Amino acid sequence: MAYRVVQWTTGNVGKQSVKAITAHPDLELVGCYAWSPDKVGRDAGELSGIAPTGVLATNDVDALLALKPDCVVYNPMWVDVDEMVRILEAGANMVTTAAFVTGHSLGDGRRRVAEACERGGASVFGTGINPGFAEVIAMVSAGVCDRVDKITITESADTTGYDSPATELPVGFARPIDDPELPSMTAKGTAVFEDAVRLLGDALGVEFDEVVCEAEYAQTTEDLDLGSWKIPAGCVAGVAASWHGKVGGRSIVELRVKWKKGQTLEPDWPIDFGYRIEVDGRPTIHTKLDILPPPDFEGTTFEDFMALGMILTAMPAINAIPTVVAAPPGIVTYTDGPLPLPRGLVPGVDRS
Image (cartoon, rainbow, N blue to C red; front, side):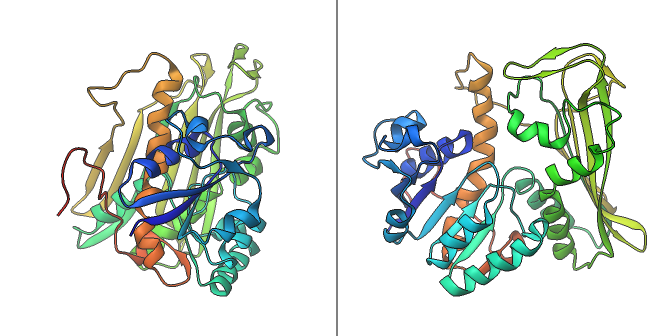
């Protein structure tokens, strides 16, 4: 029988989730949550750019939970702990891309989520491309070593065309370069990487003495027009943050992000687009992860290409649904296994 799924929000990632759910032979879309009032009553397919699904979006949470879904695909931009608790204690399992991996970055919110899982007999699993899939590659790579000295993951991108002020302003973009609040803003805005550091620590069997965030900034020397927002000259247009898991002052895990906008940065950092996963040990394993469109891809706008990134974010959660539904109640991570598999995704092939 197909897993009964409720889709929570239809933003950029949620749209890709709806497409994946409706196309998957083992999943059935039974409900859709509308965060925006103007989406209430509209078909989930219409909201996601596909044919009608027969499922109308609603903001009636009680009605959605009354459907008794096997899983909720939770894709808001940010975690709402109250909302998560309500879903989980109602007995619905959850897979999410909303800045949640282990929950440590939520402080006391992690306890509340874990207790809601116990009350509802439900599980929650958080992932994405990074944090998420990139950490899986690191764990698999480290599995061929007989000694691991350090794991480093670096994400580099020129995000000039990424028009998402709601996610980038909190990290420190557009603030004056000498703003004393920048380090705390960046730490808060990238806090989910603390989760990812602790996930890799769990995989290595290491308990860190501390997990800390360090950051550097670059300013634009000219005004930047980014569409729906602007960055004035002298303000932050480059953020380089690194989260460290340390033991005895030594960094065992380091997760780096380097994001820049435009060609007028000072200093002008080189950007190695994509992801680098480095496992230093015996042997040392270095992996470069490039994200490319398929040969049949038809894209004419930046938004078309942006969809690839949204697919990357959504699919690790979608593919984990069977694993999460089968898991015991609680917060589930990649270290709990088994590894989610991409079953049901090959078109035109009968499955055994």
